[in-house]
Image (tube, rainbow, N blue to C red):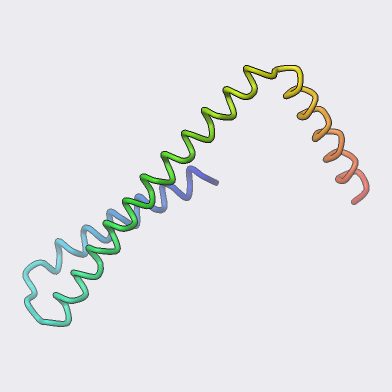
Amino acid sequence: MKRKTTADAGQLVEDAEELLAATAHIAEAKVLAARERLSAALESGREMLDDLKDKTIAGAKATDETIRENPYQSIGVAFGAGILLGLLLGRRK
């Protein structure tokens, strides 16, 4: 799901950049204003995507570090979560 979302966001950015390039020769005030808003939104989106990537990497590193520092506790938590999930899913049938 995450990869699809990232791919969709990348495709959206490419489409927006193509739209900006295709309308570069139009000098009407409304088109210029729309291009400026789209450029600002693209830049904001890129910054948000970069921040999200940084936070995701930091979270993954923190998780990895925690698991390496506490391997037996991590196994216990994963085991307990698996049992709980199995019980909950088993009741649905």
